[in-house]
Image 1 (tube, one colour):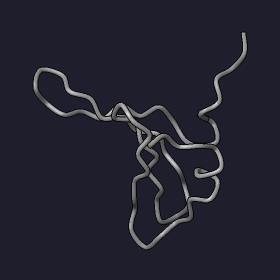
Image 2 (image 1 turned 90 degrees about the vertical axis):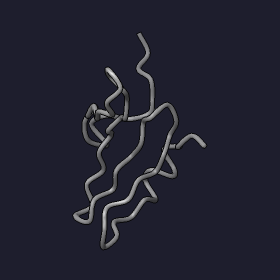
Image 3 (image 1 turned 135 degrees about the horizontal axis):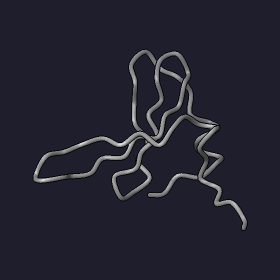
Length: 66
């Protein structure tokens, strides 16, 4: 299930970090201090890796218009 800006804004911090999946390996990581990060899982040469796209709200789901 894809995330929406509404779901992201309603995500509150908990005692332990948790993930909200968006699809294609991309997820929102909500940390106990309230920060929200955008990592993405992928595989390279058979090994799982993480690519960080940045922190919310610096990186959002909204596509910029060109």
